[in-house]
Image 1 (cartoon, rainbow, N blue to C red):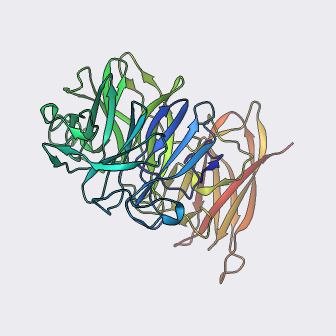
Image 2 (tube, helix red, strand yellow; image 1 turned 60 degrees about the vertical axis):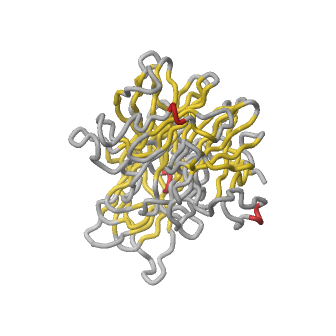
Length: 446
């Protein structure tokens, strides 16, 4: 059964209890579709099913969950979908979708290293008739498929360490071995730092590979955790590909951030990068995120984006009560999580902070009342900064040390205007956990 969520003017742009990493966005018939894997809170990488999400290109606030699209076990029978992968019961990892002759082909990989394709007459599935991807008569092995349609040709990329590519034959599941390239880009040479998650796209006259990158200037091939989406371009689909830089880096969204995976897309006249961010102080629990990006289409140059809390929107409404987990940067060992059907910032110690980019305070300076929903565990204070300037310091202390309750604490923020970043910092002379932050809201004083 379909569900519609009015969550798109936040970041993450799906409800906070929906964990969709590895997002590949595509536009079909006036709607943008998000294809990704699906984490389960408290689990590890992915699960045994996919869901597809979509929004009208003219209304990116409302996202539709079209329900289960493919499953690799029968555990979701009560959701109306049975096992659709006859050769494996592995976890379903990163997918992609392409259209051909009125069919939508879902390319997917599984935790056992196999790759397959299923199809549907609808871009949101359910997808059936799954087959393994073959080359030279044998199933290929790898992860993270991506497909680019170029005229009547369909180019398939996949792999970890090396970005491999070959053309799909007419049957859409067999790769033409005569077109095979073992490494369009790599972490072995070429200085591109390719880790995984290739997404082959077209910008003007250039082919562009977006990928999870290990690149650093000091160690260009294997230098760091693959938290960045980098890109490389070429006017020839077989390369050589020139490393151009970073599109988005999710470092700082969670203390345990490990990887990133996503792609870029133009929706109407605006380019976006879709990516994911971890939560819960784990590599997993990854949520779908999005940022606007600037793209020079003539030169295929993409500006690096900053993580925000607003995503598709220009800025957040400061009068809305906002869950703490909409923060876009966290430090000091604290992290955003899911707890008792709420989405707080936990493990807050002295020096911890969270940033929210951006709020729209309107024209003309005005005073605002700030309220925090906080569970105090020890005595401390919450310092509120607007664009780096201290505006308030709000003290807190537990009323009942045996069972601390969520309390509302308030302060006044003076002379706010325009578009601004809000940061909450915590301080205390005491060591250990100080508090849990659940939400905050602001009201103008008039």
